[in-house]
Each structure stands twice: as structure tokens, then as C-alpha cells.
Image (cartoon, rainbow, N blue to C red):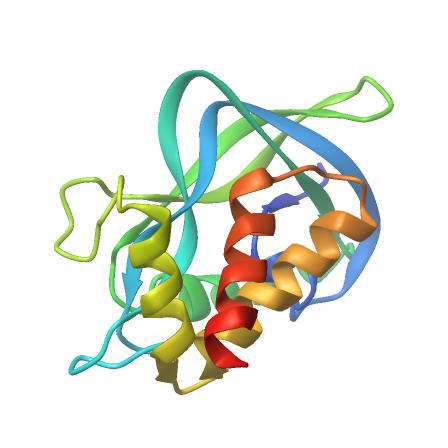
Amino acid sequence: MSMWVFGYGSLLWNPGFDVAEEMMATLPGWARSFCMRSIHHRGSEAEPGLVLALDAAPGAHCAGVALRVAPGTEDATLAYLRERELISSAYLEKMLALTLADGREVTAVTYVIDPDHVQYCGGLPLEEQAQIIAHATGGRGPNSDYLFNTAQHLAALGVADPDLDWLSRRVAAILA
């Protein structure tokens, strides 16, 4: 039985584990947004940044990449992902059904936001998001690098995300 992981943010450009297969995929019922305050990787307790999470959104769908974990590395990969993604328990680990670009349906480890967690901040206006992202820095570097890397990788994959495109332009202008 293959283990799949759904990438929609930093996992697109930094999976951190051995990938045997990569394919475009769609996750129904969820929307990608900067709805999680980052107090570790892209911000601090004093000046939280923002990172992407999947927010439940009936009728929506999120385009991303399904990553099939290299056989024999499933346990190590899951341990790595839990250490990376569950650092503050704002994400919930779920097994969700994806549709791959070739029509196959798989179940993938997917990290979604806990809307009851203190770090949840869904619905922030885009300008407020841009100001936060432009100024925050965390243990893995500037919040703006996270935004730019994700937006560039989505564009390269042919995934349109108007909010991320707008945020990229706005944050670049703030930083200029």
C-alpha cells in the first residue's frame, strides 16, 4: 500500500523526504489560504508571520501535488512530517481523498488547519496579510521567502492562485 502526501504550500518546494512519484492532484472541500499564524518557522511569538493552511470550504477545491513516499521510508517520513508540521498543534493530520491528474483516486496524509486553535486567523484582509508577511521572520527565514517560493512553484505547475499572486506583488512592493 503506497503512502501519499498532499503538498499545497512548502511541501511543493521542500518536501524533505524521498519522493517516488509526484503528480498534480485536487482536494475537494478545502481552500488554501494564509490562515495560520506562524510563531516558529516564519515568525515569532512577538511578531507572528503567516503560513498557508487548508481551511474547510464546502464547494471549494485545492490544486496541489500528490507525493508518493519512497517505498520502505513510510515510517520515517511520517515521523519527519509530524515533527515538522505538528510543531504547535495548529495543524490537524488527516487522511483525505485526492483525485490525481491521471484520474486515480488516492488517500493522502494532509495537514489542515484546526479552526479552534489560537493560531487560526482565517479571513484576514489581503492588505493585512501582506503587511504581516513583509515584516515577519522566523527560524526558517523571512516570511516573504515562503510566500515567493510557494507562489513561484504554483505558477510553474500551472496552478492559478490570484490571492497568492496579489500578495507576491504587494509584498515585493512593500519590501522595495
